[in-house]
Image (cartoon, rainbow, N blue to C red):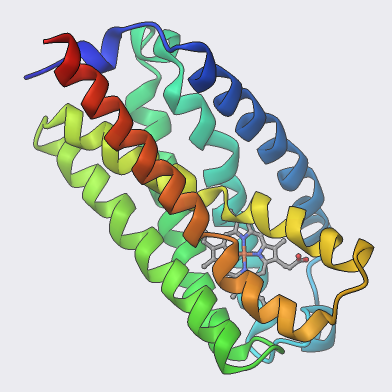
Length: 210
Ligand code: HEM
């Protein structure tokens, strides 16, 4: 097994990206907690989503756990003290619960079929990529595991990017509904591309050093 990428100290761009992702994740968890503290009782209170009661709370609970724990998993110190495995299991559970509930919510989006396709495909890919990462860990294919989990975290961060784009739409005074539909894709496709480019770049650097 090639463990080099698992043990070496992260370079500064990786640290900067990680810190930004971790900080913004905390902000979104704090924002999302309002749904857990005051669960919507009607679909009107759940973004007008007819499937919002009870699925929005289930979605937010699972997804918030994933968002809270995802960034911790990249800390090498956590692996040394043995927390990585248990936190990883809870992260996977959070992704599965958040993803399945997200998949159920998607057809009810007030923004119609394009948003259903955007959020629905995100949910499916999020679940698939996370399960592939988990499977790789069970098989002790740790290099593959790390690569799948980097993709999974990039998708978890869709919750962050979505909530960066939405205020931008308001500030720029753009028409909300078409942009909301576009954001159901923009929130995650670029994240996945960045993760993919990052992984390719890293693989190239590794082969240059061999
Ligand atoms: C990455 C996969 C995710 C998918 C597929 C997904 C899907 C969805 C869908 C379909 C809705 C309803 C939108 C509508 O009715 O128009 C929604 C709302 C919401 N989701 Fe997610 N979501 C994901 C990640 C997350 C994460 C990681 C969080 C973090 C806590 C989160 C928090 C929320 C919140 C708070 C809402 C209510 C909308 C708002 O107040 O902004 N989601 N999500």
